[in-house]
Image (cartoon, rainbow over all chains, first blue to last red; front, side):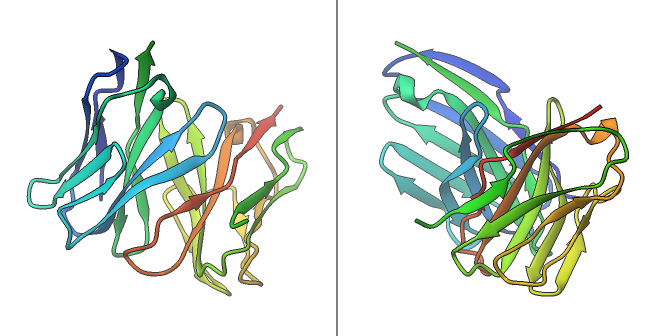
Length: 111
Length: 113
């Protein structure tokens, strides 16, 4: 059964720092890997999607990589801003169309 | 505007009183699913549907029912709610295929007393 973990569970950084969030999954047979952002009391917003055949995706200050052989994905946030404060979740889509989510990393960017 | 709409946003009910949480999407997505989010347990899938009249159990289906009579709607039914179903519920949808991001509704916070 697929299990997804995220490290660290929480992170607090000063504004302007570059940071890396980590996601690990146990079953490499995933269809895609998605990163989401969740603000308190809100739904999840899709940030980046990496297909199983891809290695990375970029959107603005965000870059996500995928290494299926090691079961890892990273989300890189450049020049962090207070507006980036949120919980970031990764999710793997299994071939059975079952999404498995990690527990999330709670990020605080201090002004 | 492309969106997934859940109703209600907040619901307080008593044990045993049947309730339905509605979910509707306007993007013609084939795939729809329900999740519950609990502190320390993260997001867990309840049920999902690959298309009309096709539904499957997720990781935590006990105590829930779903139906998919139309492509746009995927209601979640609690026939006899219990306090352990107090949670934050999310509906989501996507197109089929590996290049399709998952779109979420804003959530329904359910309290069962």
